[in-house]
Image (tube, rainbow, N blue to C red; front, side):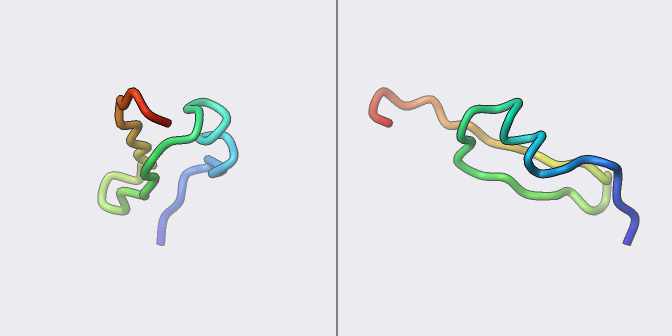
Length: 40
């Protein structure tokens, strides 16, 4: 498996508490999803 030099901690530091984080193996990227909700 080919991986980029990206730590999951860096993703969390960039995006405050994302709801979902998954790795796109095909494109070699990590995707974080933050849902916009009024209630935390």
